[in-house]
Image (cartoon, helix red, strand yellow):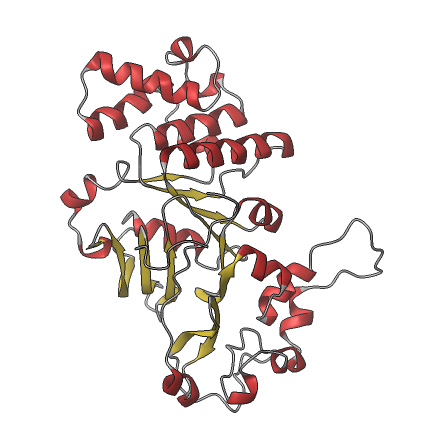
Length: 356
């Protein structure tokens, strides 16, 4: 744990994003999300497919198409500025330069008709204003940094001449060539075999440490989270249900949804006739009574109900809050009178594992 007064590199507060629905009610992809990332810190955002992880990251870059998308409320502070209020011209100086993103699918993220060198140089010349010779050297070094041999020669190659793992390395090189302060890694190991996954993640950790960079790691792989994250944000249905350090989340998961995710992972040293599913945990009312604060009337958000209803003790309103149940540990709840009376700060943790 380090100085608690350190300001976050990125602070997301009460973000809500919705999309048009062909004349029907708008689809709320993200609703009231709050999180923060510090330099040299890895925040892992985990949850099932469709829970709002990628929408949150793409909102940071203002890559949500509008329409059909819309920022309903909230803020995303970076360098003292709210990213959601910046114009497209202002975002050009941020996107790719100060904040970079590694997208999910390396096979389709590269343009097949341009060389690898051309695609890296485009970003370098846009954000770093270097001469042609200087830009070439930076691009070659970025490929070398991600472990691509004969980087000079590979600059003239096309994406189809690279394997999946090599293309992912190229995507990382493109993202880091402009020396961003924040990296958004959206499932950076998707479709890669286990050996290459480990190499890519180790590479990201090394570059993060050497460049003093913050990272948001978006994934549904809890093994990757346990190995690489400092802080974990668990999301479901566009909301944050639990937030804390990686050790606390894995050692003492509080929210039934988090416990369901962890218990649904099959173990190597246990035999079961049937695997535990998330539904087995979150649809059990007894699981919610185990939560700290339940006896004080702080009712946790009930994410799954068989008939889609909410508990009778929850007020008939859609307001949602993150409640700091104990220092450095947040749980998603309905905004009841008990929650309102106690108040809670937004989730900000400066924790970094080891000596980072």
